[in-house]
Length: 434
Image (tube, rainbow, N blue to C red; front, side):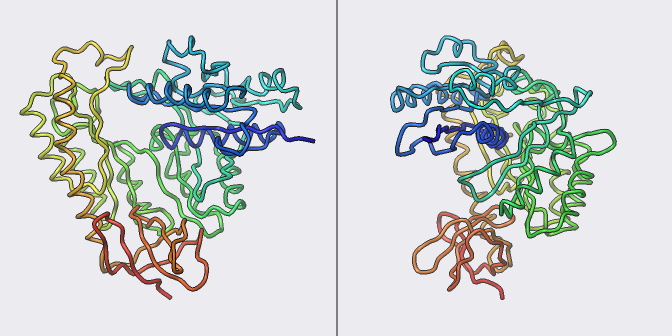
């Protein structure tokens, strides 16, 4: 019997990657063989899991659909993800056969049964009796990855003035802890040694009296050779307790991605963020006092309406003072339906481009300084790639690329490396300990 093939193509964040892994499991249970999009023969089914957090992301989704349709004219193409929920023009896009917004995802198996005459696996998500708690009725399946994302949270209640995510993903919800634990155990059984805890904001995980700290403690109590990495976190009340837990164990990576978004209080307020830059600095300072080699990454939006040249310069100076290990910089992107779409004081496109360029040396200097600070230290590294001459490459606990040599295979294993050098690309090298 010839297998029916399916490919899931993902754009955007780790949460999208986690959603795609759950879709892959549902497809697998329906009898599909999961393949890469560039499989030797065109897949019978291609699901595009889209991103629309910025106008650029939305454009990339449309371009990808056109490209996939050109390469695979006879494939059945489904568009899901955030663009399927909020981008009106996607409803008329002829490059996909069907649109699958969030509310319709539960019907995927029924749609495929009619199209491909497959055995229908009944999908029963969200039967918890509590709208703030959800189930996926699926486990993450990553056939081509060396690390896995574990979805624990969904949605957002913050409604920052620039952000489309609450409209695309809905209100905050937390995944049923029993299903989280079962999904976690099957990822360990599948051989994954690093699992990324993923959601829109994992700090807001809440299931009854169980918060993120309690959930992490339950995960850490499971036996196995693994480490946890936190995905998207936001500044908030739980952060000091989270940092204390991270500092108490080597099984949680020394890594925090903590979006700043703006370096001035005026713009933070206009954005609807819930902290001042002084409060943000104090949170990061506390975390670094507990973990001196902590990787603190962040996001910065430039050109927000009302950001004068003086405010932009002030923001840059604050960013410099934070010494981020990594910084993602985005030009402001007005999203239809958000409060910021109609704010006065819009910055020209040319000026936003200039400001993005102005932040690049800051970003590069911060990354280089952090990588250099690790020389002479011992770092835990998950090796994910082989190189020539018995070389291996992987990511440290604090998310810096590290290379070493070993006479025996250490691929997909965690080992301690004493760092002794770094290059201009901020790739560190060293020797295996023991």
